Amino acid sequence: MLTKRQKKLLDLLIHQDDFQTVDFFSKKLGVSKRTIHSEIKLIEDYVKSSGEYIEKRRGVGIALRKASEEMDPAEMDEGADVYSTVSRRIEIMKYLLFEEKVSFSSLSNHFMVSKTSIKNDLMFVMKVLSEGNDSKLQGDIQGTRLIGAEEDIQKAFLQFNRYVLSNSDYYIEDEITKKMKLLEVYYGEPLISVCSNILYNYVRNHANAISDYYVQNVLNIFVILIYRIKMGHHISVTAAANHPVEDSFFEESANELLNKAALRLDLSYTPGDVKYLSHHLILNRFESLPEQKIDVSLVDSLLARVSESLNINFSGDEKLGNQLRNHIPPMIYRLRAKNKIENPFTSRIKTEFSLTFNVIWVVLSEYEKELGISFNEDEIAFLTIYFQAAIERAKMNRRILVVCQMGFQDARTSGSPSYGWCRGDYRTIGPKNRDGCRYGDG
Image 1 (cartoon, one colour):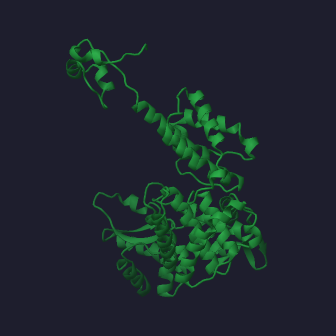
Image 2 (image 1 turned 180 degrees about the vertical axis):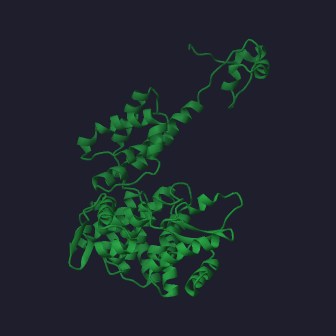
């Protein structure tokens, strides 16, 4: 038998079209989130009797679902612990970043785990949040908080976004709008919507082709910057001045984006914020570096060395040359700025194209001292994609003459291996027109 409050909670669940957070139900019913978690556990057994179950998704929320007839009851219990390790750590990150302080005791009571577990969680959380920046935890009588320069704090927010997305169902292959939907619970739907519309209009109105990966990265950075500005935090002019001088070429674009967001969300930004965003537009290839900044000799040298190592001549592949000239300058710019970019396909690329991947890394490692940078596997994986596509193009352009004593049609019906080689684009010739063919020595 359900209590009055449990009935109200169940009624709310029934009338939701999609996932809602525990915080949403907590505010609706005027009780703590801990109470909502307790009530949900009691409601679960009740709804199972009517062929329904409560689905829980990390970083998204909960929803009432109709169980299919084929579903094993054990599957309905799977993931019943709302505070699994991953979801608990996401929640702790949320407290540190959005509520700005936590305490061991409050976290231990809230998640109903030991203080030792919370200590381990915080160690893991900081390993994630401090990747590529100098943010750190500071504790005092008022609690534990994340401290650092504003640029470091925003990088910690970016790591948080990546962690949430990497632990969702939308990590790699789904469209950007679905991914950003997951972040609305943290940044608010209006802010996500405004930033998305502004950036997509910018991309649409500019001629240079920008991959979805870079759009996703800049959108994350833009959302975080606008959120922090809204909360009264700005990038200092001193910190922004540390970025290379090329940023000044692109401040007009950054100012355009920030100005539109300021008008729609009623906020004010600083020159430091403009310089910081323009820096990331370059890092993510939204704008091209001036021609004098592109080291053509490095691109040509890389092409020659990889050609020699793989025994494939890439010199005539104009598409590959253009791709490298567009990609390498901002890549070097990123690495010099020690701004790590995450490639979600790195593991797959290393496995499927290990030879190409390793050859490129060996060749590029010889330039590290000259350039004053250290290459990482994510950047090498991006270059591997370009070279691997060029290798596939080279294969397609090769023509092989297969002489079959049975004739092509007979080979086709008899299962000859020669037919398997010709499943692509092929042309058959007979004795009468063979004189028109040119033959190589091989």
